[in-house]
Image (cartoon, rainbow, N blue to C red):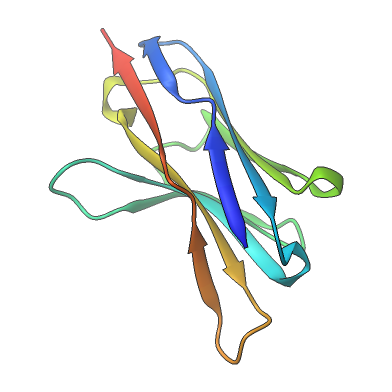
Length: 118
């Protein structure tokens, strides 16, 4: 599975951005997808995730502001980010969990930088 993110950039606090993650390869093996973020010196943090059954999970810090969604036909994952805050600044990574191997396997995109300015 290959993942390619897009949509990051620089935005003022209170603004919005929409991230996209295009999946290719053995996409039929994907059981769940999500967005993580990481800032220097800290571990990556789950932002939002969605399962193949469309169950969603959000970090408390983004509930009510971010929305995760999927375009199943085009194998694309989205993250709509509204009311952005300075603390949302991070590199955002797309993640997919593959279920075709003996044990679940994580796949990662290259990351896209999101910078929120005051």
